[in-house]
Image (cartoon, rainbow, N blue to C red; front, side, top):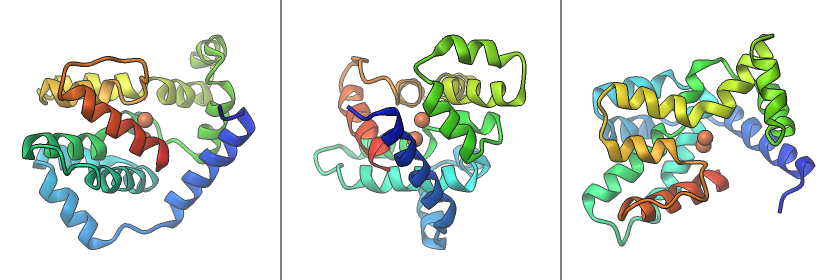
Length: 178
Ligand SMILES: [Fe+2]
Ligand SMILES: [Fe+2]
């Protein structure tokens, strides 16, 4: 199990690389071809770091699709590109993400801070981004399967019906590695 310190180093390095890395034109075309115009518009609203991270998750998922049908593959890659769409609800900085790692196991702190400061708002969005994204996706009438993958992408205990259970496992593993 990762300690809080190693989690901070890991998260910090992850975001630092995401900020430094460019997005290649061919990756933009790849994402555009996978998503419909409405979904792609949401993808473009992610911060550059989150777009880079989402593309990395999608590339990893793309390497695990050999046993999937075309529909399952498309659903998995869409969810990879959009799973963190809830983070658009606040301009999250690296330090917000680090403070969140420190406080995420202390929900009463997150709750107490929420009303009081912009930091509280940032931490609340970090804590709730799966639900925020899923609720927005549902309001946009996206498929219930895509909504479920966005909602549960951090929930390691969730049990979904197949093929979603298989897809959420691939998505969660790729997200943790990226
Ligand atoms: Fe996430
Ligand atoms: Fe993620």
